[in-house]
Image (cartoon, rainbow, N blue to C red):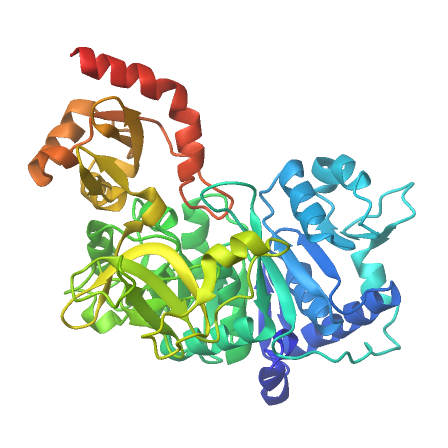
Amino acid sequence: MLFHHLYRNALELDPGHPALMFGDQDMTYAAMDAQVGGLAAGLQTLGLKVGDRVCIYAGQSFEMVVSMLAVSMAGGVFIPANPALKASQIDHIVRDSAARFIILDDGRYQAVGEALAEITSLDTIVQIGAAVDGRGDWITWSELAAAPCESEPVCVALEESSLAALLYTSGSTGRPKGVMLSHDNLTLGAESVAGYVHNDAKDRLLCALPLSFDYGLSQLTTALLSGATAVLINYLFPADVHKALAKYEITGLACVPPLWLQLLTSEWLPEAVAHLRYITNSGGQLPEGAVAQLRAALPNTNLYLMYGLTEAFRSTYLDPAITDKAANAIGRPIPNVTIDVVNAEGWPSAPHEHGELVHSGPLVAQGYWGDPEKSALRFKPAPDFSRNSGEPAVWSGDVVFSDDEGLLYFVGREDGQIKTSGYRVSPTEIEEIIAGHPDVAECLVVGVAHPSLGQAIVGVVSPRGGIVLQEKAILQHCRRALPAFMVPKTIVIRSALAKNANGKIDRSGVEEELAPLFQPIMSEKQEE
């Protein structure tokens, strides 16, 4: 199966069923297929060849989805760019990928037009919306999709292992890297997730997360594979999500932790949750308190806690049946995936022994675009003791452990651990404690260079609406729950924590913003 084949069963079984909804409109599977074929033929007419990269820079819309499918059908490689990105970031993605085409909506040209003009690899700009005067290399999306309607796209020879997409993701250092995903990665990932959340044609999945985010893209791929309806929204406030749940009778909702924490601050209206069959979390671990709140607010809704990484799509999930007794676990491997936990000596970690999570199987990506050096660091053969020994694997850099029953628990990042007073400390463990304070909305824990401790622990927090936080109260809360060496040396209070383009807390951004404050804070604490 190729990416653009995801919906072929739905097209044969019920072509009149809504594939997409946006605003007050819907698009049936038959109508979507016609537009995909037309746009694919149009792109080929413009000279798109097998393997050409096409950047798609637009908000959630019918055109965004059709464009990804059409690029795939035409033999190209689609690059969904987060609509929140700015000119310098789009410039990096287009240059790094050597994209020949960019498809963007008319609301974004003013932000990136000047940067695009300087990129020599870029042949054609396809605009969703009104035409721009004076540019010979521009064509409107509607013209391109409609012009070749009397023809069919030329069938191209692609394998399931052929490159289908580049998803740009930020690491701990450097510019974002393009994760290379094959058709197999995308379609087999959709099969796996749709299987364990039990998707079918009756589902309506809310696509609130950007389609440039692997977790957001998963909502679309599982919907199309299952013959369900993907509902697209560009939300501004949590209230918009609540309204969409009611308006579209949503059955499946996926969010990252910051959005879940925001949604928990407002009331879940009966009409918003009447059809909500399941919810999922990924992109970070939810505090146990938030899990309990969600379970209380949505007693008739299954909660799937999941762990994944862009380099391997999705790795583990926690069965909703055991959420109450293991709310801080990341679960067991998803179908068709092998997870090994490797200790510091390179052997299988014993129960309760920390080790690196290593993911192998058909969901492993093909590496980082144009960066064999970084690819070699992250993509290595599975360990000798693995059932997939020697096969491609992602060495995640995430520290986990298993309990006596084989459930996996997330500890933290190998490169994110704090070493203080001779101890290695996971920021996540402290963050969970701080997040348990009733007045804290969001928090982040970082390590700061300290002359005697090695690193000092600093907590950065934001308050719930209308509440004035006091550093002393947060520190007392930590002292009640943590050993002395894990208690932050100081608490920095901010009205909100910076987010990255996928809506997750931007750890590096927060660290950079507060860096000028850290040394004075540490000096004052020493003098005290």
